[in-house]
Amino acid sequence: MSERGAPAEIAAAWSDLRAAMIRDRPVAFSRDEWAYLIEFLAVDSLAPFIGSGRGRERVALVLPNNVSLLGPLLVVVATLGARSIRVKLGSRSDDVVSPFLDFARTHAGPALVEVLGGVEGQRLDRDDPRLAAWLADADVRVAFGSDAAIAAVAALPHRADSPFLGS
View 1: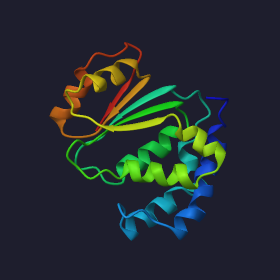
View 2: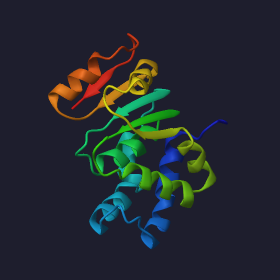
View 3: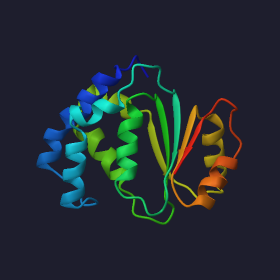
View 4: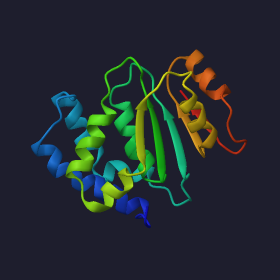
């Protein structure tokens, strides 16, 4: 991947996607969910997530089965600083991350499409060895779900310098 834009440029590219979102909506999203995403992608909404420090290169996101807009929202925020984002999608839930990424890759400008080239989402069970590999390689690990699920993800092998955020 070539040199990617600064976080503010990536936020602007997300905001530019809003025009296409107003005209078209994937069937995976309700009108209200899509409207919420459109509002979230405004530069002013993304501004609090744009930090002045160095972002983490590789982020691993572990989403629960009851996820809705949490997945797309986290992916957007993560793209503001990470070069590689791996998303473990719920193994038994509706997937709205993939349709959102497909829409963005189809309708976004070249800068955002390049950024999205570093985003991978897969349906994995918690005990899938690929998830363990993702987490072991990540600069930061983020997990959502039950207390037991978060504890299980936190216990998987990882680098000592890889912070874990669980909720």
